Amino acid sequence: MAEAGEDLATARDNAENGHFSWAVFCAQQSVEKALKGAYLQLREDTPPMIHRLRPLAQMVFGEAADEVSAELAALERHYTTTRYPVSVVPRPSEHYTQDDAEEAVTLCCELLMWVQRRLTENDS
Image (tube, rainbow, N blue to C red; front, side, top):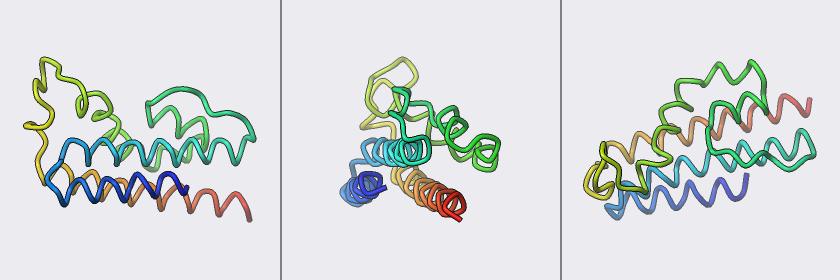
């Protein structure tokens, strides 16, 4: 979770400094790292080398991941478009807005808390 926290801080910094596409990307990365950390903690095995948040959450937490499926999907869709010019988003740095960054940071915070709660429940 420590690395996830670092990425969340970076997302916030980027949002505050107008680097909105990077803020969104760092928020996605934060959640991905939290899920991979949870995978490592719970399964005591190397997490899979995937970047899709919903399947990763299902691998870690099973059906409980359905609780946050919409939130995971909202961040997951930004994994590629925040970094690579594609036909839909030719210039990510010009496409993403402050609202996008704030929404991504908010989702990230909610999802990190969800992961932490799930880990705490598993420890009980």
